[in-house]
Length: 129
Image 1: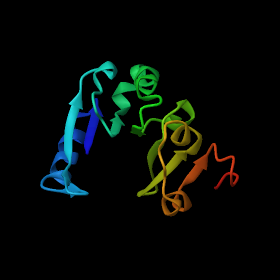
Image 2: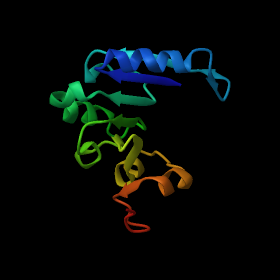
Image 3: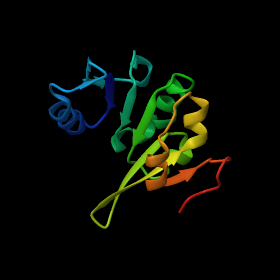
Image 4: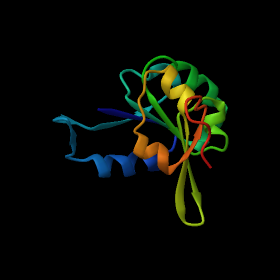
């Protein structure tokens, strides 16, 4: 499992600490910095830092159709074409999921996760608050 971080070196360092020694399905979790959107390599998850707002559309274009879970904190991240947008609201982490983009890119999001967040682009079940 490869987790890429575009921008925000402190996030990369925090993810490295969390992933250290951990495995998913027997495979180690590797956290790496991504210098530019065109150098994604074999990322499975891509965190796009708020500092990368100017390159957001370029980064999302690079992931299109590649089964990469894109995660960001910038406002309107999912409306711009990201899959998962995180936000801190009243000391709680809230999130939005763009199900249309996830489906397009071949990603399956657990129904348990979908039940906890706001779902955009869900033609199958309507939108959730």
